[in-house]
Image (cartoon, rainbow, N blue to C red):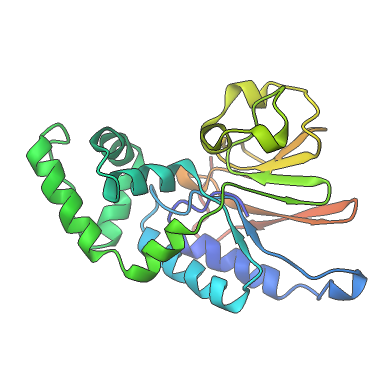
Length: 237
C-alpha cells in the first residue's frame, strides 16, 4: 500500500476492498500486507491511522510496516530531540499530525523555547502503542523478485549494502535510473497521478497527501493488479 498521509477514509476504503477479495491462499501462498510508509502528516487523521494500523498488526501478524521519511522526521524530533528535523517536519505536514493528537504547534517555528515546549507536550500524549508501532518499523523487505522500500535504492549499490537514509529519502537518482536492482523495487515517496510502472520499479504513491488518492498493488507470481481508494469526496490531483 502506498503513502496514506493521515487519510483514514482512504485507508479504510482500501482495507475493505482487500478484505473482500477472494482468498488467494489456495493458489500457493498466504496473503501478506506490506505498507510502504508515510502513514502520518498532511491529512487530518494521522493518530487515527496509526490506531488502525496497530489493529491491522494484531489481526495480521505477518503484515510488514516500512518506515517513511515522515515517520523518520517525527521520531527524530519527538524522541531524539532533533529540532532541525522538527522544524522541517512541521513545515511538511507535521502540524496536521500534532493536531490529530490534540496539540497545536507553535506559531513561530523558529522560537526554540516554544518548539521545545511543544515537543514535550506532544511526546507526552502519543500513546505507548503508537511509539511501539513507530519504533518497530522496518526499512526494507524482500519477497521473491520484489524489493519493498519507502523511497528507493541507490543505483550501483548491492541491496545488502544500501543505506537506510537512501531507502527512506532518495528520489531523483533512483527515479531516473534504469539500473537492475536485483529485483523489482516497489516504493512510495514520489507521488504520480497513477501507479508509476517501469521495468525495474513500481511506484505506488498516487498523491493521497497532495490531493490525490491511495493505491495498493497486488502481486502474486508474475501477475499484478491495482486497487484504488476513491471516497465520495474524491480528491483530484
